Length: 465
Length: 88
Image (cartoon, rainbow over all chains, first blue to last red; front, side, top):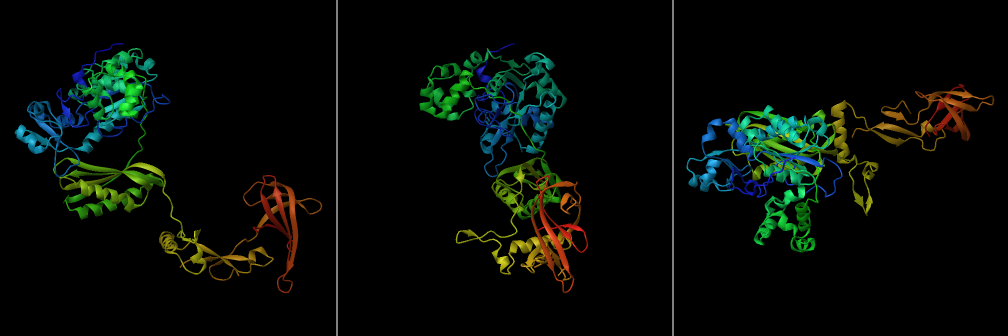
């Protein structure tokens, strides 16, 4: 088991070294599982894999762009932030651009004035997500317990793999080597790997690792290893990190000297978590990530479309098509993603999590339209894509009788007794007649309610308002 | 009643196979499409004789409980001799 001393400048909070990204200062990237990679897990190991391997590909998206366009390798390049329309800022910048003073999060005008030869690239989220998906598919051959945390970072649960792959070093190297099957050598060479009990330890180990040389931290070595790590590696509010640094607390070892009540009085509940992480008491297992197969529908326009009304109309049609897919199997929708292939290359997407599970077109389309207004496609659209990504329980069925209350009591169905047909029922019959050719609904009518012969008392009368 | 257009009587009787003992009491019932069941108890019994002036009806009803716990209303058509099951 090898252990290396964490090189503080390697921890991704320090943008001065290597390539930089405008992600949060702690480097928690966006994407599936981002932000919740550590915060959601409970301190108690209840399920999942305790032994975690973290594979981290810094500035993953920018590197993918360079693989796609190798001629840009010798130039200063910056990837633009996704999801902004008016004040475009830089998201990830190359080393050359960084040397010229360009920083992630800068306005494009500032960046160009600092580096006139800067090449600006439009992000292509569809391309990046496809790369992540192929990576996850590949890694699932090593372990079924995979938990992505952003696009360029994934945790692998390695419990019980010793007899299959050998020592932890061999396991980590095996995972790294497997990436050669889908990524070119420069991208794999830039991948860092760290292994430790719990995700936090694995992440810090990966952040302190050299390319191609995994850092392995054992159970007994976790506490001393964490003691040397900077406080900026903690997955907490950056303001807490700033305050700690101002107080002269730079490493987790220094943080440990404080009694828990003092930290709680200063930082609230996060103070408690901070200490639990710093001491290695908190071990967050890798939890398998469940990803339902999305339902994907797309529409190719004969000519690129920029008109919002046309895109809204296409969105409605696509949602209808997606909802009618048999693979939905009656499930309601809770997450949906709208994407586009843009004219001249590049892609764009917005996604939303619905407040309530629904299978109604309008309820799904409405938040997407709102997001589209805030963050419209930067260029004309060649292909519009709708993906239903998350599903809930089967859709709620509307009642045949409109539910009304009169004097605090349910009054649904009374109008029918009075000879009135509620609009919901009328619509239902109309739909059924269209589908079946006749109305399959009947109304129970009294014929001879006091008859001694049971079949004479009531009858069914065809209901066709 | 059943001749009226769009009108379907509710609770139409269906023929069932019934084994009886020497006193004519049902002991086993085979409901349509189901295996035969033993009659555990006869809960209730009544007789209807009606409409003697046009098409006479003469039925002997029994509410029985079968060995699977099901509660079934049977009648014996005293004119035809057939057994029927009927919902109340």
